[in-house]
Amino acid sequence: MVWGEPAAHAREWGHLFHCDRCRERYLAFSILHQALLSSLSAYSLAFPQSPASAAARTIRLQPLQTGTRGVSSSPRLAAKGEQPDDPYLVSSFANAEAGLIGRLLYHRCTRHLTLYLIAESDRTTEGLKVTLDDGCLTGYSDRQGCIEFGEQPERSFEKMEITTPRGVYDLSRTTSLSAAGDDKQQLILPGPPRAEIDLTIDRQPQGIRYIITRSGGASIPEADELDIVGITSKRILPVKTHKGVALLLVEPDEEMLKIHIY
Image 1 (cartoon, rainbow, N blue to C red):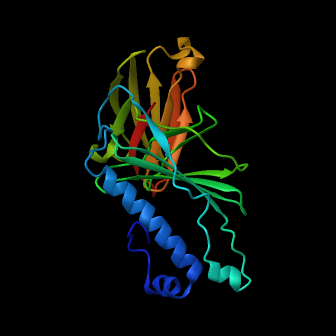
Image 2: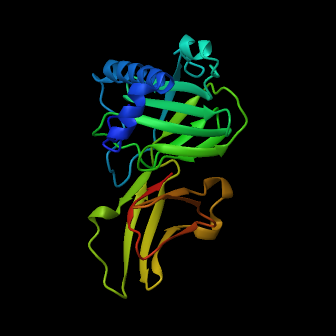
C-alpha cells in the first residue's frame, strides 16, 4: 500500500480506515518513504542497466537515523489495554548519489529478517548482491527487490553494501532455441582478474540447462571462483562455480530472464 501497488483492495483500505494501529504504521511508513524518495529524485541510479560486461561496483549505503526502532503505537491503544509494543524493528539505509534506499524489517515474534531495496520506478533492483556488515549476511534481491534472510537473531546492522554484477547475460533478447538444440554465448569479464565465460544453453524435455564455464577450469584458485545468479520468471537461483563450472536448471514452465555474474 505504501508503494502504491494495485494489489491493495477495498477491504484492505477499509481495514486501514477502522484500525488505529495499522493506520498509524501506514502513515509512518508513507512519510518516511516519500521523504526519502523525494530527497533522492534529483539523482539517477548509477547501476548499469543491462551491460554485456562491466567492472563491478560496490555502493555503500549509509544508515539513516529515523528514530524508529519499530513504529510507536497510539496512546489510545494503550488506554484500551492493548499491547502498545510494535513487533517490527526497522532500519533504513540510503545512498543519495545512487538514488537507492535499503530497508531492513525484523519481526521480533517470528525472528525473520527481510530486506527491501527501493529505487525510482524505472530502475531495476533485481539480482543485486547485498552485503550486511562486511559479510555477516549476504543475499541477492529478487524481481521485487526483496531478500528473505530467514530466521536471524535480533541485532542492529551498521553497514549495507550493494554490488553490481561484473557481467550479465540478458536472455530476454535471446532468440528461441530449437527443440533439441543448444546455443553458446561468450562473455568477457573485465579484470582484475579478466575472465572469459562461455554459456551453453541445453534444452531438454525435463527443462533447460544453463552451463557456465570459465576458461582455465581446473587451474582456477578457489578464491577466484565466480558467484552466478540466475533470475527466472519465478525465483532467484544463486550458485557458485566449482573448478570454473556452474549449472543452472529451470523447469519447463519457467523462463530464465537474466544471468548475473559476480
